[in-house]
Image (tube, rainbow, N blue to C red; front, side, top):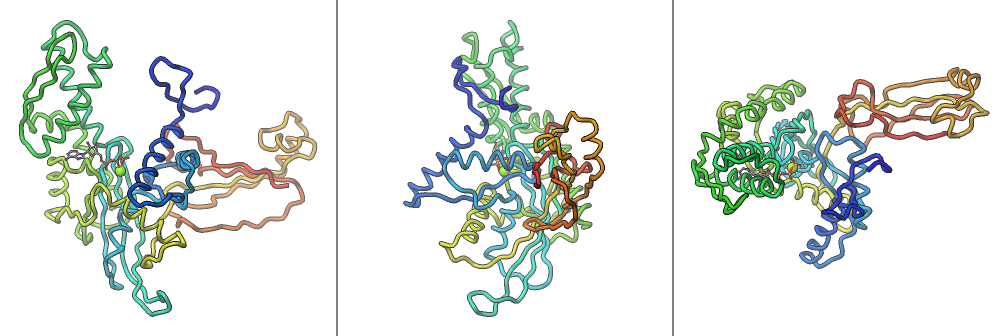
Length: 403
Ligand SMILES: Nc1ncnc2c1ncn2[C@@H]1O[C@H](COP(=O)(O)OP(=O)(O)OP(=O)(O)O)[C@@H](O)[C@H]1O
Ligand SMILES: [Mg+2]
């Protein structure tokens, strides 16, 4: 979408029907809102949504816009693993001794690892002295491009090669309809291979009136997926290094997300953790959603829920730049640069920038910076130059004129 400077999707040939990612997400949210209402019998107005750890402010804001289109209000966003960590902690009683848990989450698109420490403090709850559970996220790491869909693609490619051989008349990859069928079959096959070591695969009349037939074993799948499997432990190495912990120091390893059910992933991780059990105390598919719902109940005034402390942090450092706006350039000139040379030089006269929040800063914290100046000021908030942003992400967060 050139006008908006983003992407948009058009359906079929009707090019005039363009949908932004926000609109498509809003449709899903509307659907979720409607069936939640049918289930719970009440209108849904507020929500808490989970996001991957690596989402930048732009992606988070786009999600908030989607919620607005769906006519709801965002009480908070919470990271997927942090929500699962909350779900893990909410019904448990911890003592003051630290209890350290690693969450391994392989979903459809990405893999995220978080390490959290649980403890307790004595505090007041409903006027009574109680031991209140609290957890703090210590470290996070991820592979934003490693998830279940990548394993589907391994099988899709294998099927396409096999069909090309059986067909002998061309390249099935040039036929989107046939490829869509192959991808759907690949997903199904992957699921069946998690429970069976070999299966026949058949698609009637896949293309050119030819059926697709193949026999596949789990061993072949694992062999073809070796490149992906080699990457599954890297985020754990990184998270442990950041937390300065060893595998032995972990009290529990919790598996969440759907894609970690692939048997080979389980066996590689089992070996990695040296026989430490891969636990599923949190529902692998719904743990994050349940944790987010608990957080929503905590934030909302209409529910009374058990007090649970939660401390999370940001992985991307945020900087602020302040610059005086030359008097004769006016408001917009301050932000986008004036064309008056003298004025520009004058503006350069006062110029300050600093890191506002370092990497690892606690979320939900405020910072005040005080300075004296008698000019109008342009304030630019951006990700710090040291931030490791995705290649396509802008470092700009917000710009304000302080007048
Ligand atoms: N039994 C299984 N064997 C193999 N893969 C499975 C199994 N069950 C689910 N999956 C895979 O899990 C993935 C979905 O997992 P999940 O629901 O955690 O993803 P998500 O949270 O939507 O994605 P993400 O967190 O990456 O945004 C899909 O790729 C699906 O094929
Ligand atoms: Mg997920």
